[in-house]
Amino acid sequence: MMQTVAFVRYSNASITLDWPLLLGGFIFFILCGILILQNQIWEEEDFSRNKKWYKWKSSAIKTNKGDLSGIYPIQKK
Image 1 (cartoon, rainbow, N blue to C red):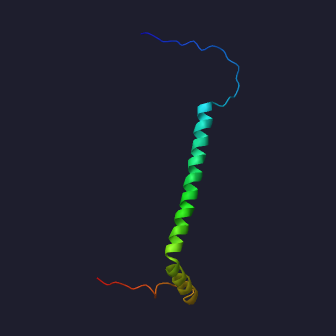
Image 2 (cartoon, rainbow, N blue to C red):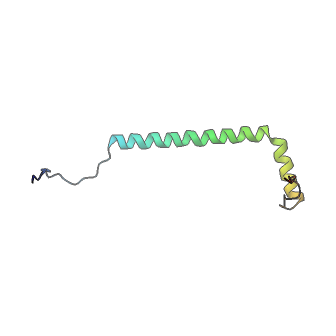
Image 3 (cartoon, rainbow, N blue to C red):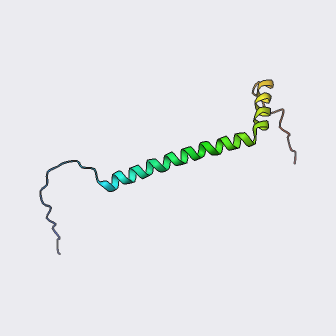
């Protein structure tokens, strides 16, 4: 049976950050920031489109003290 032995030369144990790792982390955080900003833009657009509905829902919650079971229609099959 053959055994393969690899020779690992001695090196000083020092912690160094690799450039690909730093670049990957940088790209990851940039992409996360872009997605967070895009999500905020979408929520603002959604709110501006449905402003009447949001006002109606908030007034319904205030008048019914959080119980919305009576204002939505119940469909029977």
